[in-house]
Image (cartoon, rainbow, N blue to C red; front, side, top):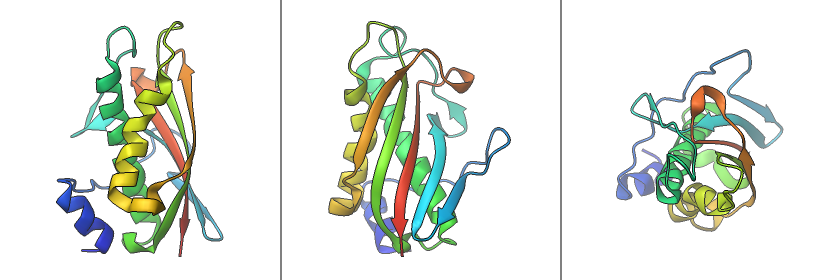
Length: 153
């Protein structure tokens, strides 16, 4: 296992196989030393985490869904690196989409689930620029979708 995967194991996290795309796109694109990872939806053990935050889903449940998106992002980075996750240099930027009600304004607290996890797992290399925005709906009714940009060696 890699150093990063050893750290993930300490946190009780095992990376799943990188999810396959649900439509006509690729899971990631590598340009130079930058990996652009397509949006990863909130999923656990093959089951989509659905619902509208602020109505069906609490902020805490939304943050947990965001954490699961971050785990899927790392799985995609590992795939992009040919299985060598230690090639990951840093997380550059996340864009988080929260399926939320019009009056809900705590999108940043939801996406913190991903940001906090990446910082805990990767240290300073996990700290990143970020956007957290509301969406009227997301594919398949999921609660959270996050895309990411990563630097690799």
